[in-house]
Length: 188
Ligand code: AMP
Image (cartoon, rainbow, N blue to C red; front, top):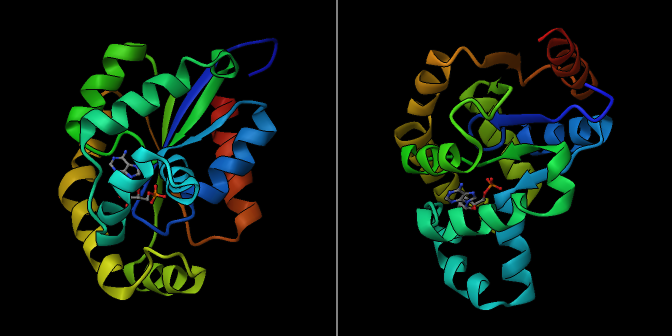
């Protein structure tokens, strides 16, 4: 994973599972960008862009932003020069349609590994209520779970079929999760 070798990873798991934190840490260690569609949307909302205004209420409701908006934003991001060294996708793809689009952009063999965060539901709700984000009210959290289970969980089977899944215990201490991910990736 050095000498310019390109590595493309996807981090997937329910909301509040620690994906964002781990994606930032692992990306830094590997020297590749952390690409979070959620962070990108939040930047648009706080900057008051046209896109931000379109997605604000969708995010507050805990729904998914329509694929065409999300895919276009992602497509532009991974076309930037820093992404040539690889990237960690955090929170994209989240729907079967987005997987198809991503396959079109990087090829169906374009990802090296898919890291799956496993966590208990009670701990998740507790964690999320603790982070104080505007889309972290209890109703929104409950809806985000439902949407995740309905639309995103099925992707695990799809990526499992491609032999890409790496499971990590998201409830382990933060440093331990990071080291576990890095050691699994080194071996693959
Ligand atoms: P996240 O920070 O990844 O939990 O994303 C926060 C919110 O942004 C989600 O609840 C969605 O409303 C929206 N979002 C982020 N990524 C996507 C995506 N790939 N598809 C649709 N909506 C997304």
